[in-house]
Length: 105
Image 1 (cartoon, helix red, strand yellow):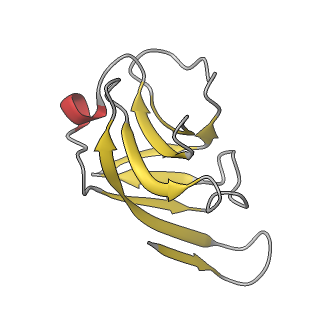
Image 2 (tube, rainbow, N blue to C red):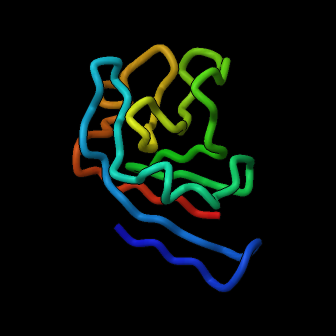
Image 3 (spheres, one colour):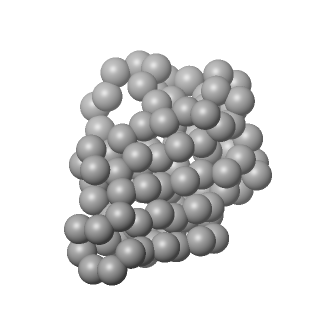
């Protein structure tokens, strides 16, 4: 897990991790903890990439996004999770355990 921050607040940063499991709901659970994401913006300043797919923002659990939206959120596990609303990221997007996840801001 790589955490890189250049200087103080407001400057670019990056966290690299990987998918460690696919939940029964089809979400990709990563090894990037909510503690590591504590200072990461929750808006469009942040991008999350995995297997060639990208999303912006880290959404709350009650996001209300429409079906088939690819999004990142802090899951009940306390780790960053990648979701495809209403479907499985594993089946539909080919995201699987060991897939690299990059968070940039």
